[in-house]
Amino acid sequence: MKTTHTPSLQPLIEVCANSVESALYAQQAGAYRVELCAGMPEGGTTPSWGEIRMARQLLTETKLHVIIRPRGGDFLYSPLEQEIMLHDIETVRSLGGDGIVIGCLTSEGDIDLCFLKKMVEAAQELNITFHRAFDMCRNPQEALEEIAKAGCQRILTSGQANTAEQGIPMLKELVAQAGERIIIMPGCGINAQNIRKIASETNAREFHLSGRSATPSNMRYRNTNVTMGGVVKVEEYSRDITDINKVKEAIKQLQS
Image 1: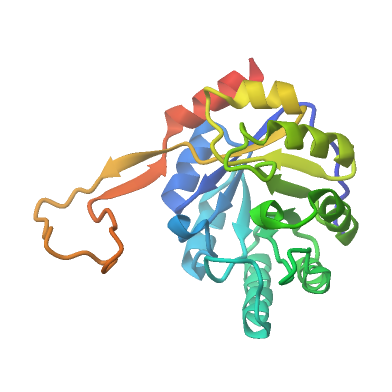
Image 2: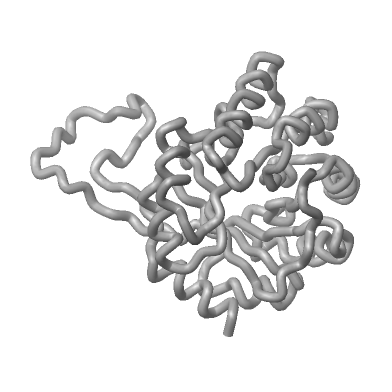
């Protein structure tokens, strides 16, 4: 049986980690939890078995949640994609993850309750976050009630705006509507400069951020005539990695 939601006395920060390396930096910075993702340019996709296993092995002080999303794009999943996602949930459970991050919609922009219930059932003891598919739904107030009733512990949302800061008015409404039944966790564009404002104006207690910085490649020879992204411009010789100082500063600002 899943644990019910008990509000935290201390504000908590979750870091969206795009690799095990980023997850470790998040842990060093003092993050309470990481959301492990691959495919960040697509908004996050399910990481590999090896990535999850290594993260579980090395994260000893920080909770590990894993996104369950087989591709980028919309959140309307075919029967085949749904089967893949259920297998991925079992993988996270078997590897000892603390939670999963899921989301699914119907073609009309409502919560796909049938599939959501299947994922919640498959999760068993895992903690569940409904991700920013929520920001693409037709009726967020109705969706909140359905997600809470389905058994999810939190909703990651920008308040249906491009950034959480822009979505403050709706986030405040959602936090009030949720009460103690489900956590509303603002995310998207949160940093040390705006986290206190978002916290004070929404009354939220959990916050989702990436805190990454560009890190140049160690490659000395660089073939700049070829790109692995084809017609899509991809930065081949730089990676975005969680920045310990950015996360630490956000935590400091939130707790001050």
